[in-house]
Image 1 (cartoon, one colour):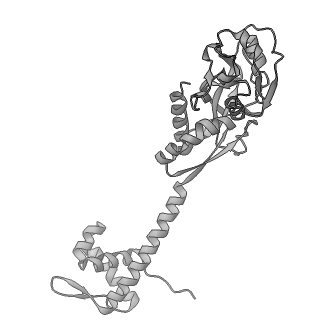
Image 2: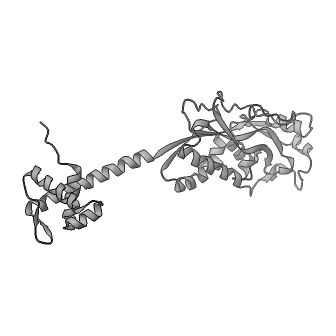
Image 3: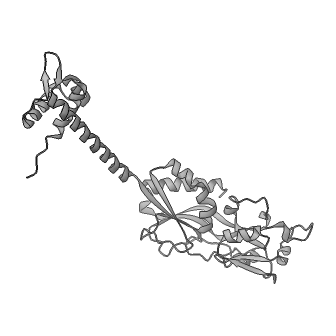
Length: 315
């Protein structure tokens, strides 16, 4: 048969009165009457069958049994409070899963995410890099950063097409625009002839071209936007993601088209950024989340933070 524990109220009254050596001061701390403290302790003594206090004329003293029991009660309360704090901390701590494009993760998120964690230490962040359509309904991610055309929005026929699919299921998805997508030619000056200047789009047709496979219409669309006839017959190299194409540019392998939001986060000291020959794509960067989850604290905090980061980037 399980032993019955005394009332928690009686134990708390005993702990405070024993610690303060005063029923009246205990009543003040507990915000009850002195009579209530006295009744709780009397009931506890009757249940235990021992006297915990010696009542003197104007004060009380712990008996030997009372001192021993006070030590055990304080020990128990300490562990109870510690366990309660751990449970509360666990409940208030959350994990935010962010699905982001690989180059956005590399150049924008990873270098800055520490500032978000410092501001919100109760939120753990997990980044999944992907260009695939995000599935928010299955909770594979809480938020996602994708690029593409927003359904129902019209674009110019000469703009480079983004053939990435942001999500297959737009039901209940909140799409908040972060920045336009603008493709900018980037190259190493050593691929030009000595003293040559890139002052006309036609010169691009004499340079080796670096393609990024996640933007299959990148260069074709860029040529179309600048009213150039066709891709040059110069050597073509293809890489899977923009961060790979950027490395190839640094090695002097050719000229690549890079989104301007990434250029703001890279070292451009050894490369040339030809912003005057940029081309706005038929799409934008969006933060995606489910509308019915947008006000969850961790998601709301990230929404505010990431929009401020893109704003700093000039988006």
